[in-house]
Length: 445
Image 1 (cartoon, rainbow, N blue to C red):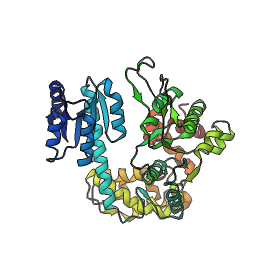
Image 2: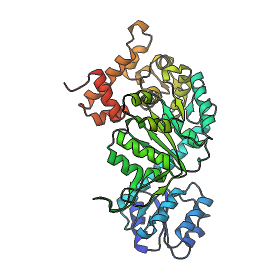
Image 3: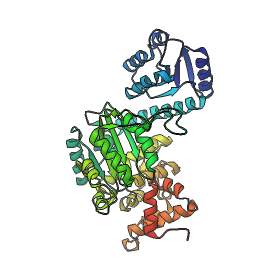
Image 4: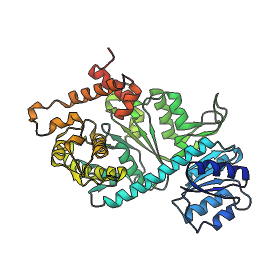
């Protein structure tokens, strides 16, 4: 990347320049905001490390000028403790992140890699959108089936209305995509979209992530941490796997939704919030309420409008479109000149039941593109257990549950029953994997 370092301390400029140039980036340094802005009409910078406190023109003024002239330039603020509040406010209004002095080089390298990945994904999405404009659907939500048209209709109606939304659907059906689409089509589109997975965490960790904490609030709290709820101010927070949130934490979340304010851990003063809540779950929350595992009052607060996403098997008309979409995405990602799918591959992919829904179809296409050696994806590029669908009699097919059980069993054996690694491979929350293991009798014994 082309990176600028704007700081009045020469030692800071030199340290960052040396560290970033070792990573292969092109770096220019500036001792003042005026000097930097004077050269901003030249080659565009991908990333700027910007000191908040500068002689003359301050860091906040420089940030606003950068965003006005080159909105695609990412800015990471360098701040002392006294300017922490200003840095937090700047992040809310467009800065990519901030680091505190004294600067740690490993943190600089990490944030640079994150900024590079962020820019790469934005550009990839822009190119994909342009290439796939003929596809029918909405953004990354692809579909022409009656079930998806119903979903799109509800999204169009609810997005402009600033109410809470509950999205229900199996894992892999696209719940986060729906949440992002609602945010993008709402009046909050220019605010942040913040996602948090509620599954598999203790109440203490969830509170720390959602509410943040003050410096010195507990042992190890060496700096103030901004919680995700505060980060989402004037935007949207997406709470995935809300059904897995501990009961005690549900009460705290209910209070936040009702009062529109939070307390950081260790703080005595509240912080007012302006946040839209979108929650998602693969559970039947009404059943969870009856079983006493989910608060009824929280359910009603979240369930102002409910969107139910269909399984991929319930929308077979969309499979060819999704195949085309993912093929274009991974053809570009892997630099492959693949023209399409062999007819036998299409037959298999159209017949398969997809227990993992759209996410599983995406993974299959990604794998096939990565392994393909010619210009066409063939049956040999598919997993061995899928090849039985090629022209086989329907009477030889097994049930969906048996196929899911066998697949989970194979991954468990591959990881030697490492539940964390198995959950990562299957892209499932740990709690969901534990339930499925119990359901199918899968254990070391």
